[in-house]
Length: 142
Image (cartoon, rainbow, N blue to C red):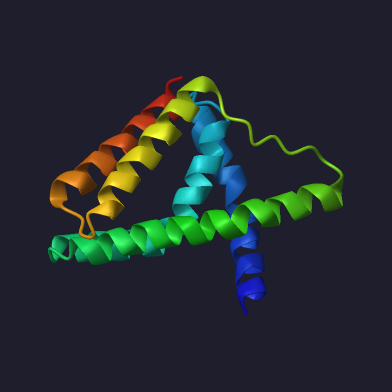
């Protein structure tokens, strides 16, 4: 079932990618924004659930949903993309420029601090959202 669901998500992303590409070109954003838009689309159900939990003041549930879905998506997507790249004979570049490495290290540090305490606070969640907003800003305006 997981494999079928993954095929469905990849198929949906493939169908929507031309429209997303046109939108990204219309706002003169870099091509990497297409991948971010597709990732946001894939993570939308868990993101909405995490937002609803946060609105109900269930911060731990919200954080668990957000981190769990991101981890699962990344844990499935990277290997799936790697297998497809190998099957198609294309090169796959997962390298990060310096600013993304700094953001990744900062995000890992903030995540470690958040998770060590055993409970997430509103302030910690806000810091995570600010880091995400910085990532999106730097992706659109390099």
